[in-house]
Image (cartoon, rainbow, N blue to C red; front, side, top):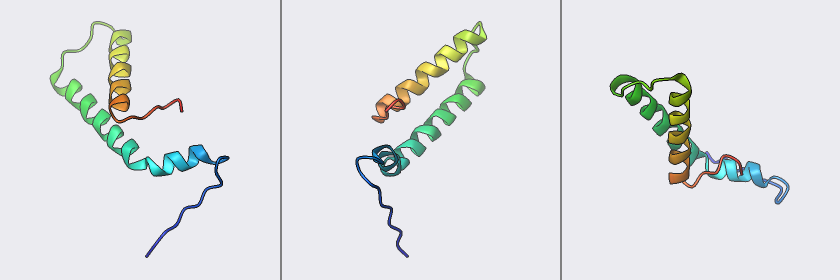
Length: 73
């Protein structure tokens, strides 16, 4: 069985990039989920909710950067 995706470039460049990089996105999400699990289970909680959210946001940005994913692109 084969599947073929086709895109009208450059109009559908974003859709094309998302399809090609889907595996990278999945790996990044899995890594983020595991990091959140580890923080909840083994880490010490931040003093405030805002500080914890900032820490989580920083971790997500780092994971995406490590994989060359720009969520704003």
